[in-house]
Image 1 (cartoon, rainbow, N blue to C red):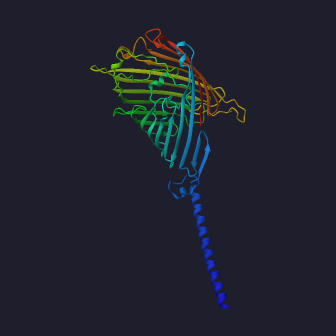
Image 2 (cartoon, rainbow, N blue to C red):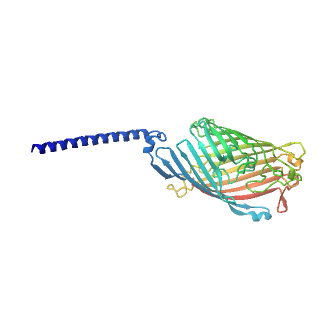
Image 3 (cartoon, helix red, strand yellow):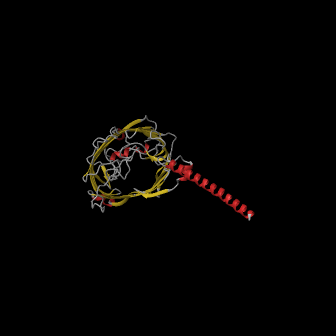
Amino acid sequence: MNRLSRTLGLLALCAGFARAESIEERVKALEEKMKLKEESEGTAPEPGSPAAAGSNKIDVFFKNGLQAKSQDGNFELKIGGRVLVHYREYLRHSERISKDNFAFREVKLDLKGKIWKDFGFRVEINGSGNSAFVVDDGYLSWERWSFLKLKVGQFKAPFSIEQTTSTLFIDMPERGPSDRLVPGYELGAMVYGELVEKILEYNLMVANGTLKAAENNSDKDFYARLQLRPFAKMESDIIKGFHIAVSGNWGKRGLATGTLPYTYSAPSTQTTFVANGPRAAQVRFDEDRYRFDAEIAWLFGPAAVKAEFLRTRDTYRFKGENRSITNHTAFFVTASCFLTGEDKNWDRPNVKKPLFGSGGGFGAVELVARYSRFRLNEDLFRDGVLSRANSAKYVEEYAGCVNWYPNANVRLSVMYAWLNYTGRNVNPVVVSGKRFDHEDVLIVRAQIDF
């Protein structure tokens, strides 16, 4: 009996030790979990830390695209896209009727995100051309500090308020003639940031200088841009949208003999307004090229005014002759206003009463007007690069547009543009064997993005 009692007591003692050890382990485990929770609250945990390893859930939601974010804040992913369809109709000159057509303005897929908070990436492919999908944006970025960031890859050069604005959000379906003087997507590296938060920004870029084309020389283009929004932090909606900026570009051209330095056509009509002169096949633009841009904008409530001035300086030569210099200048002024009272933004509008929304609204309606002028220097005519008889020296565009946004992601635009061409002859532009000095076009855009 005594032996049985001693055995039962020993078993009870062992069970007690086991229970105590189990409770102690549980308390310790709970303490570790509470510590991880405390570390994860407020700010995101450091990448690679135990807290980060313990907080790896992903939130998936739709907001202007399909987005996914990790709860620790270290990873972000957004998948988006857009389709822009244009219809053009030329209202005068029967010889141009064959050009009336529907066309894709843009068809894009967009993937962008962040890894470990500080590193970003973007891949945007465009399928609106005649060939297969091509890359527009394709870059890596480092964004640790707001005042010093780095971007490497292909993206838009920091030059011109209208070109650096996405095609989704430009005021009219097409940019003005002045856009032919500015760069677009470039392959290179850029340092940028905010010297004063929301007020003073800078961009410094070195690029191939050949846009999306393959590099054909070792020289590089350099871009610099400074943007000031002095009242951005103020409460007043009247002055906080004031914006001024200047941009500069220098590089050496490497164009093949017989290649003109710019695309001389109006974006709205796609009409080429110059013709090659008798010496065009012998000219070579392979020297310095400078570009300067000054812009001003004022967004106040539902209205906005934007203006931009551009000037270029290109060096060219003929074999065995001295070098010559030519300048191009262009400018535009745009005014717009939301009739339905929405505030004018730099990008997507905040539609107050979307169509089919709970408030039974109609969407947002905006009116836009633009005047643009493009001027060619006399040098190219004097040296026979361009034909005096069949080229315009000045191009003026008068355009008006109505934008309707059923909601923030859908837009229908109707644009009318009148273009006047001034040259040495009364009718300097030749199309299909007929001369004219003006034309007009109606453009209808339908777009949706996500």
